[in-house]
Image (cartoon, rainbow, N blue to C red):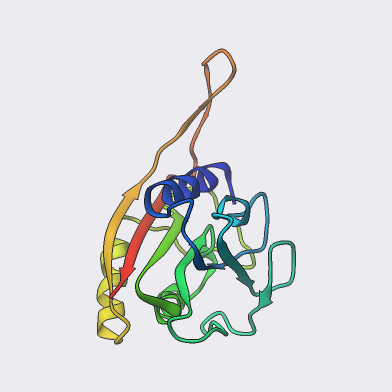
Amino acid sequence: MHGTAIENAKWFLENYVSREMSGHIVEIGAHDINGSMRPLVPVKMLYTGLDLEAGQGVDIVMNDPYHIPLSDQSANIVVSTSTFEHVEFFWETFLEMARICVTGGLIYLNSPSAGPYHPCPVDCWRFYPGAGLALQKWSILKGVPTVLIRSHICEYTFTDEKGEVICGDQWKDWVAVFKRL
């Protein structure tokens, strides 16, 4: 996770998840590379991290990126950050995220809309606000309906201790929040 992804994860949790909330949060792409959502999650929530390879932050290694090995409607919140650009058929992974999310639960996505090529092992996509509407339509069409409740592109500027700009945000994160219907 790059720095802006962490800032956006904080924004999501502060605006959509109560610090007192309990339940189950599942992260897809949980391998801790430069940061993770795990330490940000409310302490009363059960956190399960899934990824395609073992590593720090990974509780379950998935054999197939298009099948999440959890039961239908078993998670209150499903999140994925800095991952979808690396998933060849991300729309299929999104359907799986919707499948495991409880009715009324939330799905949070964060992926770059810009930035350099960075294979891990592939780098296939960049996302814009319309991607959320497309995923909403796809989920409805496939019988695991969601509604997009927020979609935007973030831009950050980083400054030094004197307040001088030291760099801009190369990733321009796309952030989307869905509710499972």
